[in-house]
Image (cartoon, rainbow, N blue to C red; front, top):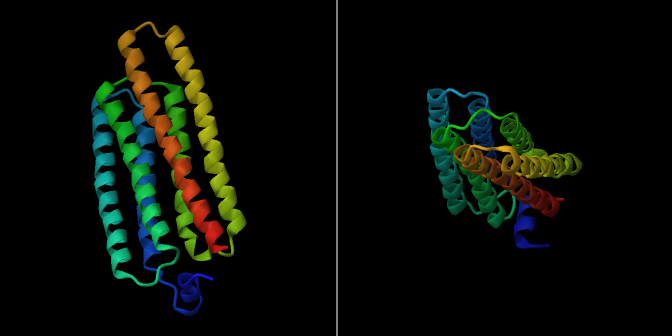
Length: 215
């Protein structure tokens, strides 16, 4: 058994990282909920306001990530492998960055409202809800392996659904959209949303890897 795992058995578990992960996940969910609102309106000013609020979430997320890294530098004992502590913080930050990028493209391009774009945003919000649920249960990771696996599977399935929406919508867009400017707008936004879904899947993979190591 590795030394760090032996220490985890006999030393009081270092839990100060868990509240920071929860805080990060809460902030990500807030941004994802704002993204859903962005996709639900055609009002240009409202989109800009909502996008700015997501930018504020991004800034707050950067500060949380910095705090996690600072704690990692100062800590000898960590709740799981040091590399995983860092990787998870960075993956969560990337998820938030992609949510921000999607909202920013809405604010810049101002496309016509689309049910399919809004649908992908709702799956992204669901991914953020799942992420928060998992971070709130990090204390019980060893005992809830099956539950964590099911939640990771749900994010994976959401990404597959978003892929299907992406392929179908992109095909219809090039076949039926006659306005070239609108086509480019929606294509770029669709790509940003699909990329965000991909990042959520990668993030769930990181958590699954941590759970496997801890089990």
